[in-house]
Length: 176
Image 1 (cartoon, rainbow, N blue to C red):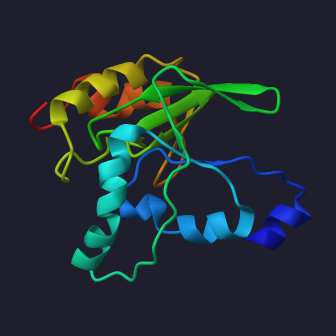
Image 2: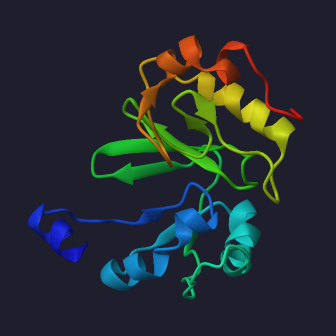
């Protein structure tokens, strides 16, 4: 990992966690040790973060202590990467403090929107009604926005509005 960053001439500035489920924070200690970066997380996901060791134990997964987040995300917060500016969208439902980070034609979507589907709402802390509202907000992003989900291939808002039953009315979030 360090070598890839070095050979590509990258200058990392931080870790942006869309949410704190264990599959999204499991390598945090390694990344923090390698690069000593500030870790950003929405405060409503701190409890989820703190429960990750128990979740790992439930699944029989090894777990190393993870460093606590250094900074908190907030709705509407502007994030800078050089000359680029991104906006934090609080996107609860899959997790209480889930965020989508968007700007410059892209959205880092975490586990809200996938190609042809959406994130789960049957995990502890999930809220199907909040998730339905989140999907409406994400669907309102510009159609050409490229969504990079936490799992699977990228997609666009336009593609999902045309083909994803959770965005075009063909299906609804259970409990939402």
